[in-house]
Image 1 (cartoon, chains in turn purple, orange):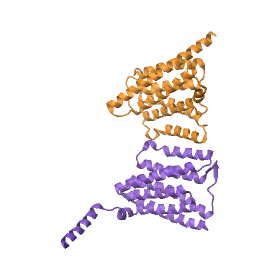
Image 2 (image 1 turned 30 degrees about the vertical axis):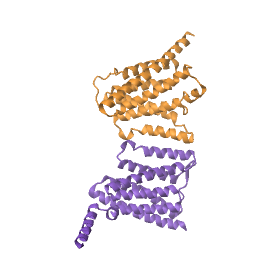
Image 3 (image 1 turned 120 degrees about the vertical axis):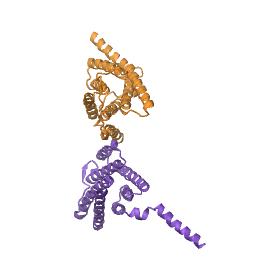
Image 4 (image 1 turned 90 degrees about the vertical axis):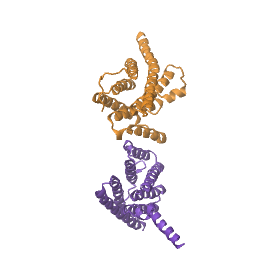
Length: 216
Length: 216
């Protein structure tokens, strides 16, 4: 009964997402960082999709209902998420002139899906959006030592991998792993255990060398 | 007979004027653009957009001249040129591009940053969709909509911010799109002559109905 397994994974994914959003909103109330609210909005959109997925696994619903041509409801939901994801990235990059681009891209890709029965453009779009966002966030997160950005970047990267392969089992598991990486980002895990504090390390090194010298 | 000769004469004068005045205006606007770029180190977006409109229009009128005056009228070129906007051909492609850039000028003049490239994205998407699926049903309504919309907004902008450039472009577009939409020989012939005069006056910097321009 694979549906039960999917349901458990989806519920875990949902709970992790809710905890992450609550943590981010708490932080946002303290420091009014706009990135926190932008990430929260995106995760809320992801969670709305998750509620639909929970309903699908619980009641055995079918969202592969064809709207027109090869366009299904599931694909429309995917387009909405990728639009929000790209908007989020453009917002972070402070590119207001490109704000309408994600909407137009999704509109034409959806139309293309109605006209031609191929998922290739959708997969390419998903890859560009996910890997592009991941690269930007991980690069900037490393530079600014921002754990949340790293978490978000890993989330996009792992989710992007799931979207690329289009294998349901793999996608569901990778989504959970992605949410875990984001969850760790909101809890300050990367700041604590991943980023090496150069000054602190030099201090330790200095003491260690000093001890060696004294011993000698 | 005499009437036909007269109409034919007016049309030919229009074609000749187009071939001389539009490229000349393009060169004048291009020189001004480069001069300003050298002086300020920045590219003026509105002037650059105007230059691209003139450049595209020059390309179109030169091509039309070669075909209509039977200077270089090969079946392949005539077929590629098309001369209508019912489907994608060189003519409709350039007219669509001009309409899109004119919408860009409106957004630039009004400082609607987030809408700045929307028309270009939308049009680019339309071309890509056509390239991959052969779907071109949006083209004709888009040309009417973008052309008409840009004319209305250019007049609106011109009177709101007392902008001579916007007014000149509005008059030019009214006459140019008028010739595209209304295919009445006499009217078209005179419209072509008038817009050439307007364009020449504008590009030389003599078009100043608003003595004191007010910035937005």
